[in-house]
Length: 580
Image (cartoon, rainbow, N blue to C red; front, side):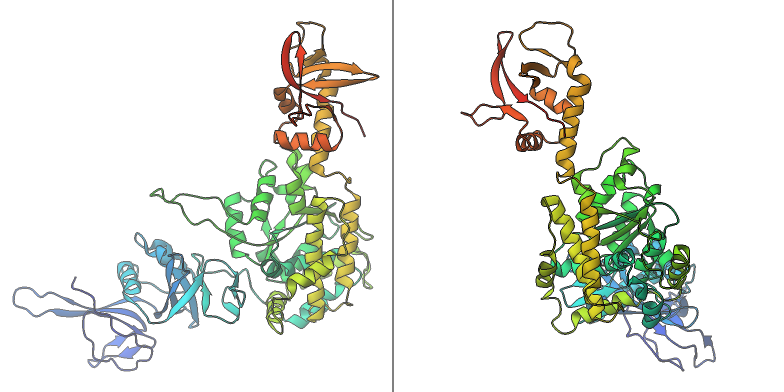
C-alpha cells in the first residue's frame, strides 16, 4: 500500500468533499456523494488500487467503524503514551476514552473488544485499518494521563468521566467501562435516606467516615488502611458496608469480595485510588493469603513483575481507605491456616465489633427493630448513590484547599491516649476518620450535630483499646510462644546443667535452679526454634524489656553470657519467663 496521507478530520458533512487519496476521513453524518452514492457516517479509508497494465488507479472507499476522533495525545510523564478517543456509540451518544497505545499491539484485539463493548461499530475486516488510522493521527493537543483515580498535583482529582479541580488531565485505563463510580438519585435523597441515620449510630458514622477518608490520605500523608467490622450474621454489617459504598457508587457494583486473588485486588485498588476499597465477607477469604492481602493493600505498592522481554513493569500504586466486614476477625481467619496475625496486620485493618444495642445500631430512629433499620439503609443505597464523594472533594478544594488538613488532623489526634506505638497508629486512623466526618458535617453532607463524628471515633477507639492488652500483640506473642515452649518441651529439649545425660534430643539448652524457679539457658538456635517467625533481635528486645533476661555479659554488651557446660564454653541466653 502507498504511504498514508493524514487528512484533517471532518466533523460535519452533508455533501462529499474533494478527497486527496489515499487518506482517512471521519464523517459524523451520513452523506451523499456527487455520483448519488449514499455513505454512512463513520471513519473511512479512501484508497486507490493499482490498475492493471496501463489502466489508471481505481478509487475505493472502505468503511472502518462508526464515528471516532483522535482528540489528543496523552502521556503520564513516565513514557506511557496513549490517545484520547471521542466516539459515538450505537445509541448516538458521544463518549471519550483515554486509550493506552499499548492496546494497539498485535492485531489490536483488546482495543476492539473495549470499543465494541462501548457501542462502537467496527467492520470485522477493517481491524488493520483501525489500527493504522489511530496511529496516523497526531493532534496538537496534549493531555496529561493518569493510570489511577485520585489526586493529581493536589489541585485536580481524577475520576472516570469526571475531573474535579483545576488542570488538564484524564484517566487512562485499559478498562474503558469504569462504571463502578456510577450515580443515581440525588445528594439530598442520600442525606435524608442514609446519612441522617448516623445520628446516634457510631458504627454507621464509622462506615461513612471510612468511605470519605480516602481523599484525605494524600493531603495528610497517611498510609492506606482501615476497618474490619465483625460480628454475627444479620446484625447490619452489610448495610453499613453498602452505606460506605454509596458515597462513591452503587453498592453491589462498588464492593468487592475478599474471595479474590491478590493480583485482582491490586487492580481494583488502583481503580479505587484515593477513594474506598470495600471488601465484603472476610469469611470467604483464603485464610493462607488474608494476611498478605492486608499488608499489600496497606503498603500501597503492587508486586514487581517482568514483561515478556524480562524488563521490569511499572508496579501498581494506590492509596485506599479500606472498609471490610465479616463474621470473623482477621486473626481467626488466619488461624484456620495455622497462621497468626502480626501486629502490623492488626493495626492496618482495625477490628471493630458490630455488637451494639440493636445489632449494629444504637438509635432506631422510630423504626421497629434493627432489621428494619438495616433494610431501610440497604434499600436507599440502590436509589441514591455516587454524589457524596465527589461533592466532598469539591468542598475540600474550595476556600483554603488542602493545606490546613494536617494541622486539623493533629488537633484531633491529640485527644487520643494510646499506651504504645501500635495503639498510636490505630489512633492516627480513628483521628483521620473523625476528620473526614467533621468535614462532612461542616460541608452539609452529614446532617448530624457538629462533634458527632469526633465523639463517635473517640468512643470506638476506647472500645477497641479496651479489648487489647497494654502490651503490644507482637510482644505478647513472643512471650507467649517462649512460655509455651518451655512448658511443653522443657523436659524434652533441656536438661539440668552439670548433670550429664543422653536422653535429650534436639537440645535447645539447659536449665539451672535459682531459688524456686528455673533459669533456662537457651542456645541461639534453641531460641530461634522457641520463637519462630520473628527476628532474633526483636525477640531479645522484647525479652529484655520484660525483664526476662536475668544474666548477660556486661563487658561486651551482649545479652547472652559465656559459661562452661560439660567443660565447653558456650554463649547462652539466661532467661527466666514469668507468667501473667
